[in-house]
Image 1 (cartoon, rainbow, N blue to C red):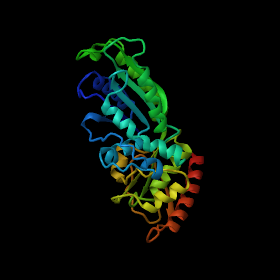
Image 2: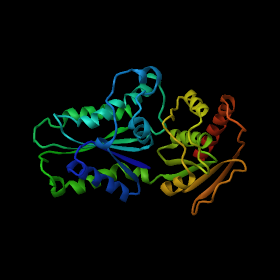
Image 3: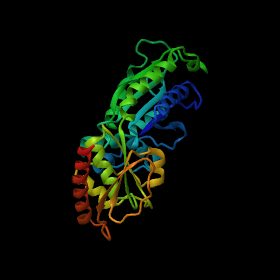
Image 4: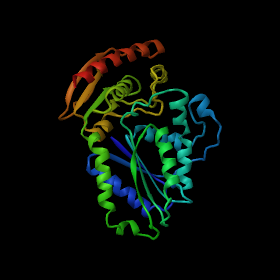
Length: 322
């Protein structure tokens, strides 16, 4: 499970960074994998309102959103926004990232596609402000709510701190560490308690990706699901993405991963080998299952649809058995 922190302050080691780092540290102590994105260091172009996302379901701007951030947001099951207050809202750097997530809004509301992690993804807000105004965080809270809705994350609340103006103010705060620890625990404990399942195939470009997505849709609340390939391909199979779209499931932002990476990061309780006669290394301490799915010599829309429907049925039976 990935906890993604979006650090919106241009001050890399400022109060906002310290606050977010404290949250991610608490998440890691609970067993989560964490990653912080320093938004100011990213090449993120502001939204140009091309409206391609609403007409075709993708953003045509080629920058770090396309290369990394979109995939991270889709992979994460907890997304944490962290920002200082600039004119009663988030920083311009973070707002550029938020605006570019219009593509997720379009996929959800225009194309009616389902993100496999939508039922379990959580969102949380962290913020600091120099003044003590009564309405200091109201604008930010509203923006955050709409952002989390667009990325299919349940808004689980916020921790906001007034009067944080000087370097080191958050480190000196008397209750922040406990508040962050409690907030992280409340959000993560149900998620880290889930049984971990890893689906394995040869290249992780098609069948194991479909199995992962179906398992997340059917049982993301009780299973922490991942997938990997023994020899991962360079990119996802385009037929598979289209076939899953026919089921109203969107997985275009995913990419093939190695089994070695998946085991290291995921530490599964159950490993499911999908392919018949497939070569897959044993995973210490994990229960093993073999599905013996016949891999076609080449993928086509017809063969991928057949595989999709077979895998959907197998996942449904598997989920019921756990």
